[in-house]
Image (cartoon, rainbow, N blue to C red; front, side):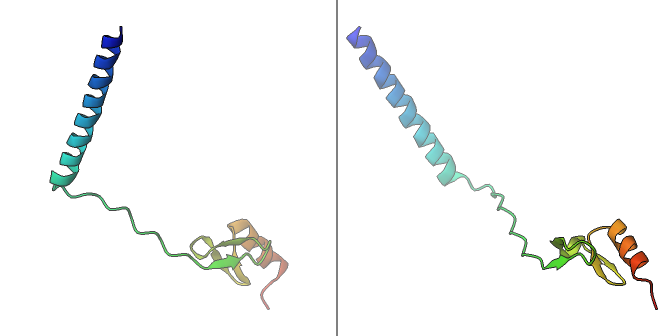
Length: 85
């Protein structure tokens, strides 16, 4: 029984050693282009909705007569409450 355990341990160690060597060989000898992670996007300015006060990124803000708004409903409500002179 002791002999079988020793053989099993040797086989596991050999498999681990062989797996590490093949990974190193692939890593060192692989000349294929690797995909670089995308560059992080720069932070955006945060704007405040003139109707409700919610902060939102500049790209998502809707411009209106009284400022910027978080949605079409708030822009319409603000412009209805504050008619143009």
